[in-house]
Length: 151
Image (cartoon, rainbow, N blue to C red; front, side):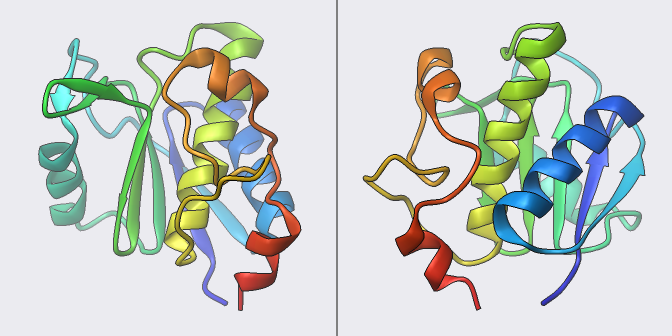
């Protein structure tokens, strides 16, 4: 199984996310601390993903935490994954412990996509979240069905 590289703007946040992803999916994770994108109000998620994909410092598979808000067709999204790169937007997740817990939730979910999983209807890390309430209620680990799909 490949090691997932977590790119985070701060060491504290990166360590929390790396630990949550590693525990949830039982995969090795490394940490790289660096600011990836500036923090504008919002950027198109696909454009941001393309920017990250063209970066030579991104070792894949990669989970990249960015300060910019992400949108798809004008709607806010917490994260996006395509092939071997995933983005987690920190812009609308709050501050302090809320930010860390929610960033971990989005990161664990997007890491599941990096590992080839789709969405799940169970009480599971792979259940989609469209609000902060959804993120706060979503567990940081997958259900047994999703866990069993990881090779």
